[in-house]
Image (tube, rainbow, N blue to C red; front, side):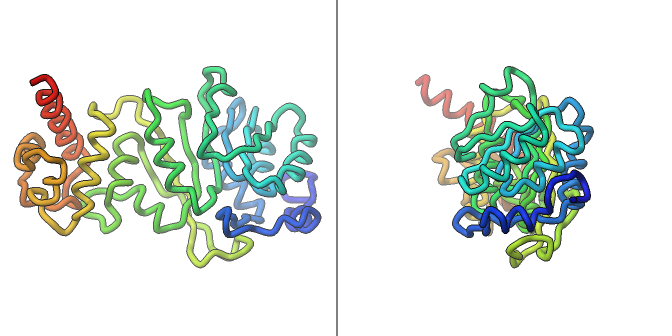
Length: 287
């Protein structure tokens, strides 16, 4: 019996179903149910909540979410080998666990939500974690269909998500993440907690969507950030030339000096430059 329910220990589940982690799927199984419960609790009160979980594997986090009261868990799993152990959990919690055999990068949960907002809680597969986060931060229209994300990343990626200007990790991902959400690293998890052990520490990050981010076109913001950080050692007057507009005009709109570098520019500065870029392009298209 485990620490959170009366189901078998995860190591026994893995052994019974020959569920060895596959590097090609970015799998590292978290077997400590005390830690999975800590991740689940980080999503706030779960009673009445619908949870989207990506990459549940043998179901350690799934079990914690259900044991702590989640009304409904939609578990999206690509690995067919994990479906049988997840089905066993579904039988233990009748009507509360829905298993979706799909690639998370191609899965849209909205038809299953019926207009209800959900929480995303997941130990993401390392090889698609950043891509999934960018997809979720790029949802249109905004606010999105979720009201919180509690996600596990490699520590280096987590630092890139929460970084602000003048931080070493500040870049394109931080601009998008912090423009559209409030971000925070909650706690770290040692490599020793996983099977197999990764070579790096992992971190659990909470992202709460902002209902009304500063107004600008998301694509323009991403383009300005990509240009600026694509040549991060160069001044804006040089790095922004790739946008085919006058960099000085973009910098002036943000009330910043064009001799500054990308890592010193706050998100509000990138938003202002994105607005100006959109205005310039609109004028050109109407000429």
